[in-house]
Figure 1 (cartoon, rainbow, N blue to C red):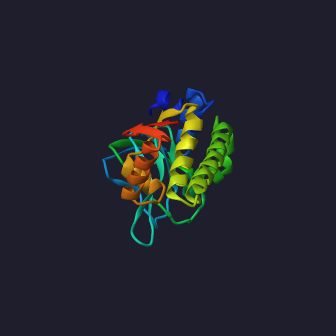
Figure 2: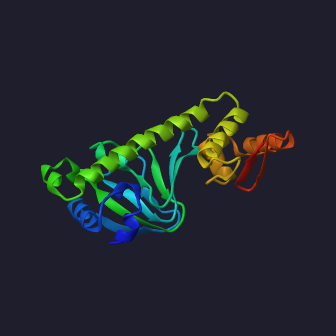
Figure 3: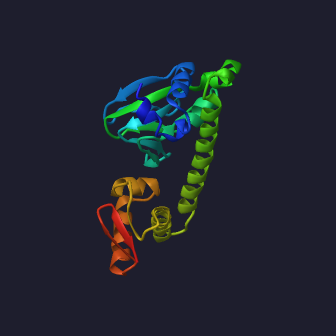
Length: 217
């Protein structure tokens, strides 16, 4: 198991090598590789494993009733996903996890979390606290996205999203993790309309951009 990589991830923060190995063994963890465009978790299925991305990129997507694809989240190496559904026993997935590139994941069976035996596993308490922090942080992220989507105009949605990243990066110039189609999907808008509005904002001097590097003015 790639312990050196796992030690740098939020879910294993503060755990030493022996503790990580003990937790992995108790939760029946396994390494899995996926190819580009391969589905990892599918809408409507029930899962008992959460996934930790070690390499590659994953998109969490959802189709609306018109068949439009919306990107709910972009998963990067070190990120955890599927944990809410895995912990909520019997809950059907409302989203699909798609491997955007070739990727490698650590699948973690969370069914043992509810076992009293896990309490005696070295590092398990730290692991559980880290999981709680991740769940809380993701709730905050979803609240921010909801804030973008509730803006009345396309312009307001764009500026809300870009302003959030600018504040996060503490810079007026920053790189977003999405291309134009992905950005349109994330904001639940038409790509052509998004491109037109970005050109207007650039012409008016509100921002500048080249591909996915933006500068707010």
